Structure formats: C-alpha cells, structure tokens
Image (cartoon, rainbow, N blue to C red; front, side, top):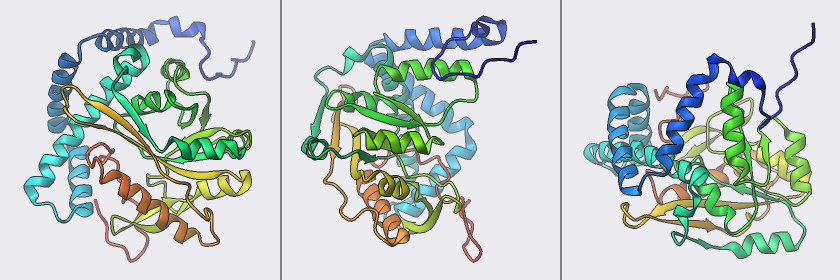
Length: 311
C-alpha cells in the first residue's frame, strides 16, 4: 500500500475533487464573484457583514472593546464602542480589498502611493536583506499587493489546516509575493534574508513567553516576540518599519505605504529594550489609522504571576 505523498504548498492534489471539498470550491467561486462587484456594493456588503459579526461574535467584540479601553484611555466609553465597531467594518472591507488584490487587482490602479521607498533601495544597494517590521493589518493581502507595485516583498505565513484551502490561498498570494515562507521555517527565513530578500514580518501578536519577553504595548505589559532579533543577528539583515493603510473618502479610498528609516542598532544586547523599541514603532504606526489593526486578537492574554488578568 503506497504512502500518501506529503503536501507541497500550492500544489494541486486530485483528492481536492472529492465531495468533502466541494463546499470550499463553491465558497471560492462565490468569493471570486464578489471580487468583480463595484466597490459601492462591496462597501455596503462589508458594513452589513460587520454589523452581523458585531452581534454574533460576542467574544471577539468583548476582546476588541477591552483592548481599545486599555490602549486608548483618553477615549470615552462611547468613542471606544464606535471605534470598536469600525474595527469590524475595516476587517470586512479588508476581506473585499484582499479579494480585489487576488482576483481584480486593476481596481487599485491610481489609488496608491508610497513614502520612504529610498530606505529599501539603499539597503538593497548595500546588499542587505530586509526584515520589514509590519503589523497584522485589516487590509490583509491588499497591503501586500500595494507594496508589490513598488518593490518585491516576501511574506511570512502560517499554513492553513485544510490543505485545499491552503493551496488556494497560497496560489492567490503567489501573484503578489516573491516568496511565501512558513513561520516555522527559520532556516528558510535566514537564507532568504542572506539572499537579499525583503520579508514582511509582523511581531505584534501574543505567542507567550517561550518566544518572547514582557514589554509595554500602549503602556500595558504584553508578551512580545523576539524571534526577529535572532533572524537579524544571524542573517546580518536590517530592520525597516513598514506600514500601509487606507485613507480619504471611504467610498473612493486611497492607500498609502509608509516606509521608515532603518532601525539603528537592531538587535542590541538587550532583548527587552529591543522589544520596547519595536512596540513603540508599532504603536506609532497604529495611531495613524487606529481601527485598521486586528484588535480582536487577545494581545494581552499572557499574564505571568503577579500580573492582573485582562480578559
């Protein structure tokens, strides 16, 4: 009896035609149809879906409200709720924007701009690999597509549990990114950085203290990953902050990529100080468009002994 061949990212397998995958095929076909709808209709659908999710996803709603209360204490209760609802709207808009990036990229023509591209150009001229310190933006792959109009980005990704869904997403992303590197493939990440790649990496989520240290995030102690320090140290790459966001009239949106100067002395000898610096960079980015980040993630779930529970 022959053994099942290991799954290769992006590779089609005949078993994907079996009935158990038909629901996914139907869903993907439906999403492709949504991508060709006019933005005005997508905008209305996003708002309707956001309202539905706000009422149905109670845990995510509570997490979003709690995160915003902690990180923006200057906001009133009414402002926190209004901004939290906008997070859900931006998330749904981001889904449609990602579908547009995958299936109808011409929609973005004339809608985007970039600031600070010279920082990437200079690093590449020096033969340096680049770790682009970004965030888990609600724009999702739409942001990656916009970046790809100005330089060749790679991305760190987490494989989907469903192999067919992973294949479909991988293939869609292959039209945007030069390479997609598994988040567990440290050797691949280092190799790509040594080869001069520019990798979008988001050190803005809570993965516990086995992979990080406690450092303030908007003034609240948070588990902060430190893996990027090892990547930079081994590969001799440079860290450059990257942020992209939507602005202007939401019914006729524009998109901007903001690239900041290289982070000096990164990594230093102090991993906590490095974590603090990275968190401050992310904080400054998020203040530009506060609701375009995944606040429904439990950013403060790790609470060591002596720390008060957040959720």
